[in-house]
Length: 310
Image (cartoon, rainbow, N blue to C red; front, side, top):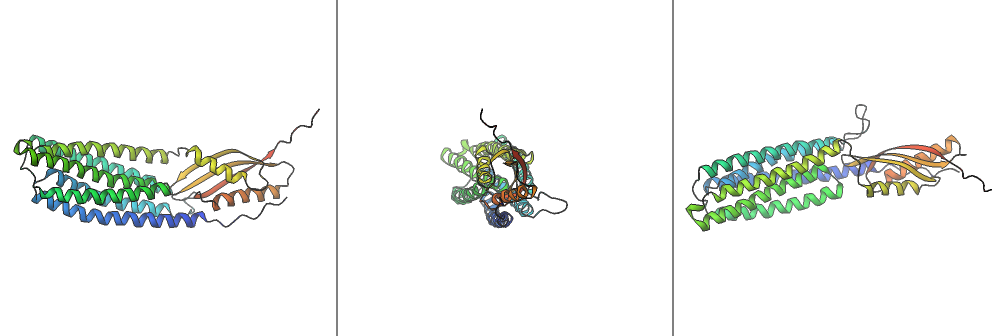
């Protein structure tokens, strides 16, 4: 029994395309951050809003983190080489981990300046700052949702981290909107509401940073993928002609792709050449499947023949 030739490996090309789309989305987000940071700083200074100035600082930090994510995604898409036989996929969660550090720093900076604003109240912000904040919240939430959908579709840790970073900016701006509104309605006695809102936002940002860091660390530590994904891998391998059943199956996420180590049982009476052909067919089937599998190690095991009755 000869297994059919393995189909051409399509996964590396698919990963490269996905990486290109991800990088383009990240760069567009960085461009938005440049515009918003300038607008926030100007509106915060002219409108006497500590929360809006703090918001502008976070947008400026977002520019740097976006460039880091862009670089991580581009590096992760590089093919294996002599120094990295399993590819460069770990660059993506490492970029996400660095982004989480930027988020923690932003949370600390905003929190520290908010406390200073509470201790030393300043002029009540101008009502026009509310218009700026509405625009910021709308733009950031739109980009965050779009990037999160792309991150989930591509199972990209870095892209999800970048989406949460944009959402953090939207949350900070929303909190600033509430604080400034309270200050404007309440009058001079409520001038610190702006700073209190920024302080609350810093806590939300720090919490999101923890979630991003945890996901990145788990991927760097080669945590097993979801059981449902492993089952899909098993089904594809079990459907290959000559495979009796699948025994062990280990799947690790590496950037935008997956690495598979699988043990399949075949007829023990087959020749070494036939077993080798089946192994190649299993590898080809997994790489050709829409699972973004980039590398497969197939171990062939002889299936134990059932004992004769009686």
